[in-house]
Image 1 (cartoon, rainbow, N blue to C red):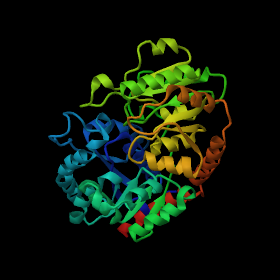
Image 2: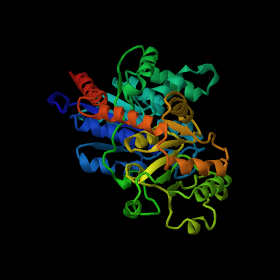
Image 3: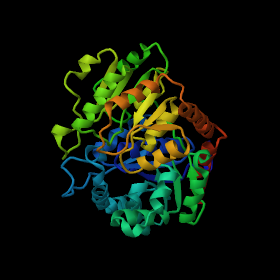
Image 4: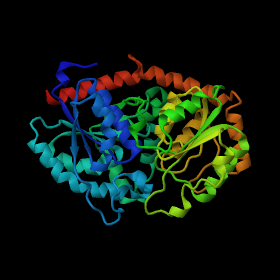
Length: 432
């Protein structure tokens, strides 16, 4: 819903450089663009390709591309978290802080400078350093849900790192907060977050729909998208395929890969397994190694995709029935927009909070393993995989009810749709 008053309003979007953070922020950018707001997106050169689908739809969106500053602890050429481990978050943010001065200069010389910054939840210290000299509103975008954020905020901040403590305090002091979640799922958690924020400028706008089902959203994979979809089309039984993927950040070690491969082989199910490229600075001989001969033994029954996969498209396909996942929030939402049973293997950060919420509290997913270095029992896992596509389990039925609530939220007139309208309206008043 566009309105004339918002057309002169300009916002700067600042993503955190990781696929699971950049993509939902771009989806939010798309939603605000169709509501009439003018936007600029800041990225470094190696992350610019993420913008291509968005810019093809909205040529009026500007980009601010600045070179990634060098940092002694970051491997040369790395500009995205998916190329390293999650431990590099503070270093990436610290490096990007060096760009505050050129961004401030861009602000001061722009003919119509932004009235607000919408920044990723991990970039609060970056945005905080910009705002004092610019006099604009800071709005946090949170790609995780309110349950996970409130859990982080409830911890004793005296016992956490300086980076995390600073991040929490500055996020709580922001002018607004946007969640890629929906109020029907966690209204109590939204209210809990408001207690920390001490205001009610909080919007639940999720699940944010992908700009378009574009295979180039996150990079290239070893199997072209057309071949993946053709293979799925050839699976005549609906809900018979298991999709296995652990997002853009998780790599499995050699023993984990062997256990998972054995489970897939023993299960007899059809499957697609996405294997992430090894990270830089890791043990290259111990990551993402598909066991020798595995692909030959499962030929015709399974696909192994190395690198990026069109996950949203796969999960929406009628042939896919279950999804073995780390339960990152973006993956949960993509599973929700599809019609799959979630099999949870939480590994780090918010995964454990999501598992507690979805498995223990809501009963809409199944925990199959837990821990970044845990080795699953291949026989037990094989049985779970087999049952996940053969039984109409109660978790699937409950998940479908939650799915219906999510779809209603993003329809015109739904809670998330109205929240997006309200967010655009409130921002449009900042220049009045």
